[in-house]
Length: 170
Image (cartoon, rainbow, N blue to C red; front, side, top):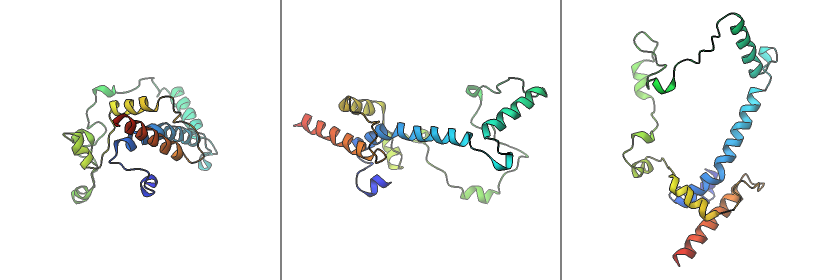
């Protein structure tokens, strides 16, 4: 949203969308991975200053020692239906009027075409677009640290791709 606000990103421009993906995907994943590690290793005061990792390991050991942990991984995910884990019949459900007011997000598997997805606000880069931009960028390092959270790298990538395509069309 920041890039759009400062007019560096136009989601209708496929070059901008693909460069956004290429430059920020790994940065975002790295941040998520660091957050996961930090969360799993932080101390929880109400649990005697144990970390979530320690609490899991201790509960697992107790379950093994008491014979509850069988090593059975559970249901095969490829064999379960979309209703897996939902309660039906006598299960507790919110009132029907509340369910009717629940927002539903658009899902890409419900759209007949990429154009329909785009009209719904879902922007999807296909593999050919991504590979094409990567080929144009060549050995340009999209993971370079720029002390601006990747914004300078994104701008440089879009400028390089746009310049290449203008030169190619000329």
